[in-house]
Amino acid sequence: MENTNDTMGVNFILLGSDFILLGLLNHTGAHQFLFVLVLITAFISFVGNALMFLLILLDSGLHRPMYVLLSQLSLMDMILVITIVPKMAADYLTGRMFISLVGCGFQIFFFLTLEGGECFLLAAMSYDRYVAICHPLRYPVLMSWRLCLRMSLGSWFLGAADGLMQAAATLNFSFCRTHEIDHFFCEAPSLVRLACADTSVFEYAMYVCCVLMLLVPISLILISYSLILAAVLQMRSNEARKKAFTTCSSHISVVGLFFGAAIFTYMRPKSYRSANHDKVVSAFYTIFTPVLNPLIYSLRNSEVKGALRKVLLNKFQKHMCW
Image (cartoon, rainbow, N blue to C red; front, side):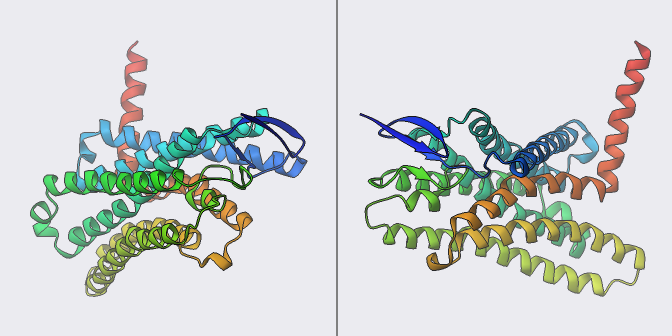
């Protein structure tokens, strides 16, 4: 069965299971400029995170738990950009803004896997900083390679479990209203608004899930950095204190931006939610926040900058030899 729908002057021929993504931007001059800005930001984000991931992979000096966790953060941000931006850009350029039910399910799954995994990964990184600053002599024991591997895999697993449950539950609803999703990608809260069944139980379960996925990691992060702050204030060396503050401030910046946007989107009461606000905030933490991670961690980290110079110098020397 086919339905025809005209949205923003564009004709769509939809199958019964298709949805229309209304998108983030229209085709005015100002929004075309914003579209170019979004593409540039997404490209910088992808390249920056890819370089960070490869640099940590190739440089043996960075094969330490702190940087292994950072490499997983970069990998998650790379996949997040690939999951959201190409589809959004293709929709904007071609005007074919439909997505299948299966495609919608995949976007929900990957988005929640990556966002949920990043929550736990940031908590693991805060624990790593706590051990490095508060218990430096016991670091190899308290932050062993086995524990680092478990933290990395656990972050991916918990994120994937949340993504699978929410994607499966969301797609089991009957969508008897309009198939227009007022968003630029399939996000569970936006899709639930289209359901004709009673979604109160699912929304309550999703709220509980968000409490576990957001408030538990951020509580661990706050505890870790409270202990770090107490330890730093007791340091006698100004140089050691400055180094500790510099390392931790970059992590806190990422945590604040990421968790602030996620809590605003998923933990507001339903009566305070607005589709336009959701789209703007979602654009912030799916497109703009990932670009900050490689910039913050590379520009403020002397070891990363040193490794990058070493890799570039080796490449230059090999080129000169040819």
